[in-house]
Image (cartoon, each protein chain N blue to C red):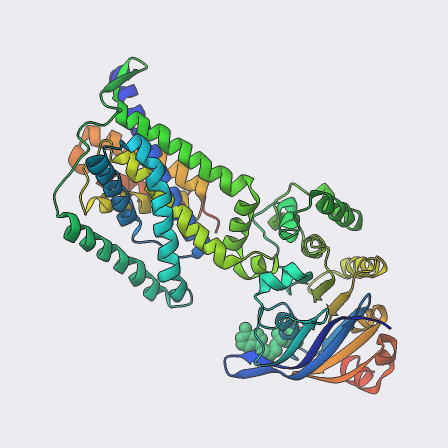
Length: 238
Length: 287
Ligand SMILES: Nc1ncnc2c1ncn2[C@@H]1O[C@H](COP(=O)(O)OP(=O)(O)OP(=O)(O)O)[C@@H](O)[C@H]1O
Ligand SMILES: [Mg+2]
């Protein structure tokens, strides 16, 4: 039987008065890449923020490896092994590339594990090795995204959450980011991916969810979603 | 100016500048991590000076030793300030935050007046009294000792922030709280730590100053005002800026005081305004 890494059950959440999620449920199976797609404002980022504890749900449950994590503080959830690479990258621009990476490993103190993860990140993104002593704020947008992903990998995450990793990047850089995600998947890391680049995301994903105003309106294997009527008409304009 | 006099003025300026630097590093650290100006910073200093005084008067412990008590004592004061007060106003409007620490300053001053009266006190016979010769010029030994102590303490804070895992977490929290939390950093703990270390800086500085400065409830204002100038000059939140700024203001004050004692603070503010006009973010500011 396949095991489930993350289960979100009937979650309601919002911001001061306005509800962003209305009974959202989803599941991420171990070792899979799951894509979360939907229009602007559908609630994708809010979903991820509920999972990592930045937004407290008003109702519903979040289970990580069978254990309830809603109600825990963000740093406690991170310590359990969920790495959230936030929308807009949010690297620490005043610190060096290496400092950023070590911050990703803040709760992982074993030097051998750190070295292994650092090697993994550098082989995935060699440019980060070349720039390891540079102040992170001076990196290009694409390099900053690589750093944000690399920082997440430094946790040895059991679940890697990526919020629009290709946002605002040049097409060539978008391809490189998707190549990296494919490689991360191949290495066996479980990924929950939010993307605007629907085709690439759903081609890569084992399973996908389509969100509309805080609810899942469609779900299924990535390839099948791509052929669905909703996706083709509403999102791809076909 | 004769060469001797020049050495006298420059070295005196640097000596007090190191103490300004330590006080300002504490202030800038709290601001950098919290985005809150601690208007009670001077009163923390005053508390430390009184602590050193009473340890001396009641138990005959010289400031050279009580500095090791005053630092940790003020660390606790800083932690309590955060836990009892600041924690509850983190998301309050800026004005409320200003009145909160400003109110704390008024409260601590009044408390000191009430408990110990308005009198000027001093440590009459410090262990390190008298004068020593540096480069052919004589300096008060307490001043030299205070400068050495301040350099050591500032160096320790610097190493903590820039050379340790905890310091890296403090820097990350200072730059982006939410993302720091996503790294697994307990930001609430970092806030508490920033208040503790920031207050411990004046804890050490207060004990050092008590060796040669009068101790009275209003004494904090003298140094607080200077440290606000230092921090603005060096750049809010910049530890390096606070250090360099402290030395500059120390020098300026002593040189100006030598030329015209009545106008020394005027000159300090003039230098400050000149720098701010030229570089509004301060020398090492980040925006
Ligand atoms: N900090 C906030 N305060 C108030 N409302 C918010 C906040 N963040 C998001 N919202 C609202 O919540 C709803 C869901 O937003 P969310 O950011 O989760 O959408 P999204 O699917 O990630 O969109 P995008 O593609 O634009 O990133 C939107 O209506 C948005 O306006
Ligand atoms: Mg979003």
